[in-house]
Amino acid sequence: MASREVSTMIKQGFISDPTLSLSFSPSRTTLSSRPYSPSSSPPPPPPTESARPSHNNPTLFEMMSEEALRGSKTIEESRKKTQRRVAKFLTELKAYSFKNGGLGLSDVKLTVVSRDGYRVAMDVHRWVLSEKSRFFAEKLSQRREKGVSHTVEISECDDVEVYVETVVLMYCDDLKKRLIGENVTKVLALLKVSAAIMFDAGISSCLEYLEAVPWSEDEEEKVVSHLSQLELDGSMTEVLQRVSSEPSTSARSDGILLNLLSGVLQAKDDKARREMKTLFSRLLREDSFDDDNRFDVSKDTLYHLCHRCLSSLVLCLSEAMAIDGSRRDRGVLMAEIAREADNLQWIVDILIEKRIANDFVKLWADQRELAELHSKIPTMYRHEISRITAQLCIAIGRGNILVGKESRFSLLATWLEALYDDFGWMRSASKSVDKKLVEDGLSHTILTLSMRQQQAILLKWFDRFLNKGDDCPNIQRAFEVWWRRAFIRQYTDAEDSSQLQITVCSYPS
Image (cartoon, rainbow, N blue to C red; front, top):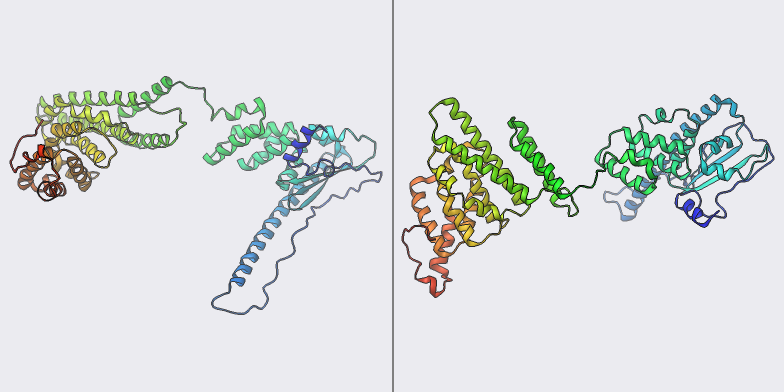
């Protein structure tokens, strides 16, 4: 046997020593027709629980003994289950041999030995082994004396039960039917042994089974892993078609994702739209942790969708200004504005998750036309739009968006008054709005600005809060921090000190 073939045999568990373990021992004696039963060399029985001292607090030795006893019982129970299943297979093998009476008496004693010494002996037919397995055909062809019985031993097997069942499959007329009802893990084990002994019918039947049945995610990983290790060339292509795809370019991936995301944004059914948003958010979040992922949504695609949503919002608000008072039109328009605002919030969430929302802060701060339209229509139509401002402030306050001071101030200069005006409606109309979260995000964002900008914003808020109360965000925490910075700690330079005075002023540019 070539050295490469020997090393392969050892690796696959057929032999442990290339000169000793696999033996063919011809004997001139006539074989008995009595089938062999599985013989095993189980470990000595665990010690019985003799009279042991009764203690409320067992000693360490007693605890270790009990643990060893439980382990021995578990091993013994597992061995008994294996023996029962092997006995069932041997009974099945005997039935197949009886059914195919033309095979005559068995002329090969095949013994399979596990790594821990568990042995199973079977009476099989050389003609069946040689016909079904190219491995056995090669080995048994060396001994063709008429009336000679051979002894074959396969040692160091990973799973004796699977080896025995694979031999049973050699006698089966309809392998595909025989595999119905088995689980994927079992069939993968049968495939491995079939490939090792070059049992072509077994290989093809296992592959047909794997191609036809559904897989769980765990099973899918096992299938791909096992097939890649077995290296069955083209025969496994059909099986892997469900998980392998053609190499795709970045442009092709972007096109697919753009169509999918656009479909979600334009969905007619609100429930389906919400469910698909949740699904895509989860999938894209998973992709963000995979550095090798080749099917990720690009920044350009997401910002293209942002611009589309912004254009839709401008159109909706323009229509709202010309509304004729029809109840039906009002309801439809409110729903459309809410849907477009929700769509934009969803895209912004994805941008924040992927850490590419910096440009959107600038884009949102530049929406002066939209902000002007926003101020001219009733709050009931527009309050969902202010949630986008709150969303950005929360992300900035958490450090999830890093933009320059000018962009942060421009964001508030454009949209803060709108957020104040809509805050009461936001809280009452949507249970998903977390008042404290919005207030904390707004406070932290304000406190990242210069002292002059903080002063201008917080003094205007002070006056507004005194008149509006709960309908205005409570950012007292930001006011306290600004107060201490301005009048207690006074970490100021000479250039800014002259500007720190209590006065109500407009937002500085």
